Structure formats: structure tokens, C-alpha cells
Image (cartoon, rainbow over the protein chains, first blue to last red):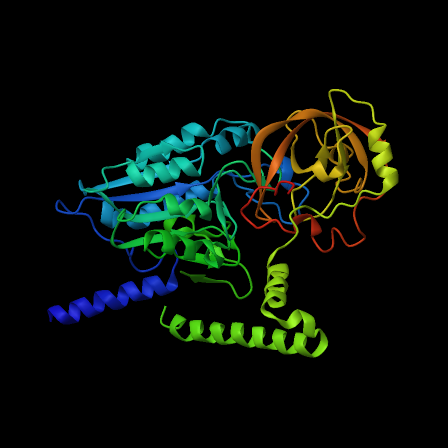
Length: 253
Length: 191
């Protein structure tokens, strides 16, 4: 009977992994307990500006909060694992500068709205400036001998080589803040818990950066081959679920 | 990982066959170069891309540069090459185009000339006098995957809408501005 339950759980997890998107049956992440305190980290890039995007056939980020909302939707899904679990720390690393400049376009201050997510979900919100901040946090943001990373997911702009926290915001169609795959070698070994779930919800990550991440950390990172679209609303979760949007697009690791 | 076991011998096989082909070809058509030294030179030549963008500088252009006024400005040549975010080449007055940096413009103070006219790309090939400065920062061009110098534009003046060409007809089409410039790297320096 016990074996049957294990197999059932395994099959459900497999289905979730195969589907590879928010809204899958169950969050496939290790569960923290007193012996294994874990950190669950969501990394958020900033939105682009209409000032630069208006010249494109398909301007990015019509909604300022697409990345934050998608991260929040993922948090809702992770709730069974993290809610009321004192051994679980949930952290949002976020590039706030992009939201400060977008605030001018929106004609309202977006920063309090982001902090309201922190308060509602009791997050550890850590502003970041660049990829070095991310590397530093992953390596030493918590005592990694004790607190391993069980989940690390990225929501934002990217190409095959880099996460772009700033994209088409300070400068059109380019980035002044990034985490490039060449920086991943600075990550220490042993940061992640056994079975940790790592995924980039950005465009094209699966075409190169996923392999570099695995080479650097020993942990596979799910990434997209092709584009990812953040305009897809998930009514059941009242949130945003990024979906593959290129012909022949797929998730890989 | 499992398939690598088969791929590595396969690539070794392909590599060896390529060398065999090159040696056979050279023995038949250029026997003097078919020795080990010739083969080494051939392979070294194939593996070494040019280190600088292939800007050409005809004598007329060199003379114009030598006669340029100097001042608190730079000289820029617009390269409109979508989807890349690059603006074009920027150099100091009286310096060769071979010293120019391929820049991304920061337009926080002043729009680029074509954007200011709401005609993006209309000024491809134009030469400008640019007032502003190199910030010292790198900007990551998302489409090319290269790190370019950031030039903060304060003001621009058109020098010529039809300057003598400094690149070939297929420069933009063939993305020659990135020749010898690997992804993830800043612009290579002059050798």
C-alpha cells in the first residue's frame, strides 16, 4: 500500500514536471522541515518602457506587473509547501529600479504595490541591482551549510545567454543589469537541496544558459526553447501563467 | 550525458577525416604546403578570426580625418542594423575609424537624431558630431549578445548625410560588425 502511494505521488510529480508550468498538479519542490530548513527563491526582473517599445510590432510588457504577478501566482501554488512552515523561508529577489522608472509611465508609485505582495505573503524581499547581487545572495544570503535552496525560479526578460533584469528600460532593446551565463561559474557548489527545482520562466534560457547552469551547479535548470508569453491569465489562480509562445517551443533542461 | 559516449568518438572521427581530407587536397594541389608545418598554418589560419571590425578607411577618409577640427565632441557614424540595439561607431576627432567603438546610445538626455525626428533608421550611414561622453559602463545588446560601450548623448550635429563609405555593401546584412567578436564579450581591442 505504501509502495502504491509512493508510485502515485511519483506519477503525479512526473505529470507536473512534464507539464512544466504553473498550474501543474503539485509544486515539485523539496519540503522543508526542522531537520532540513530550506529557502525558496523567486527572482524578478523589471518591465520595459513604452518609450522604447512603441516602435516595435509587438511591444513588451503592456502590463507593468507581469513578472511580479507571475511570481505571486507561483507563490500561491507553493503555498501548501510553505504556508505555516517555520522551516521554509521564501525570498523574492527583485530589480526595483525597473519599477521605479516604470512608475513614471504608470503615473503612480509601483513600489508600495510590490511591497504589498511582500506583506501579504510574508516574503523576505531583497532588492537587487545586478547579477553580482544575485550570485552573492545565492552563495551567502543565508548560511548555506544549514539552509539549502529548494526552489529557484526566474521571472523576467532573458535571451539564451542571460537574465536581463533591466531590458528596454534604461536603454532601448538592451540591458544595463543582467546575470550572464559566464557569471554562473561564481556560484558555489552545494547551494541546492537534493531534488531542488530550478526554472527560468524567461525566453530562450533553455537554448544555452540552462546547460551552463547545470555545469556550474550540478543542478538542472528548466528553460524555454523559444519565447515565453506573460499575457496569459489564469483565472483559477487569479494570476499570470507564462506560456511558451513560439512554434516548436518547449521546456528543456 | 549517455549519448556523449557516442558523440565524442563521432566528433573525433569527423575531426580526423577533415585533417585527412586537407592533407590529401594539399598533396595534390600544393605539395609544398602539405607538410606538417603547412597543415599547422592552415589550421591556425582557420581558427583565428580577425580581431577588429572590418571598417575600411580609404585615403580620402584618412585625409579628412587628419584635417578635422578638435574639440569637446566625438565623431559618430550611424549603423542601423535591426534587431540590434547598437547605434553605430564613435571615435575621437583626428583618430582613425579603426579606433572607433561600437556603441549603444543612452538617450536619457537627448534622443538619437532619427528618433527625435520619429523616423527610426532613416539616418543609416550618416556622420555626426556627437556631444556627450562614454559612461565607462557596458550595455548588453540583447539581440547580438555582445557587451557594447555606453555613450551618453547630450547633443548631435549632422556632419554629412552621404559621407565616404567606411564599410562594404554587405556589412550590415552579414553582421560584419560582430566579426571576430564572440557573444558575451566586450568589443575586442586593436591588436
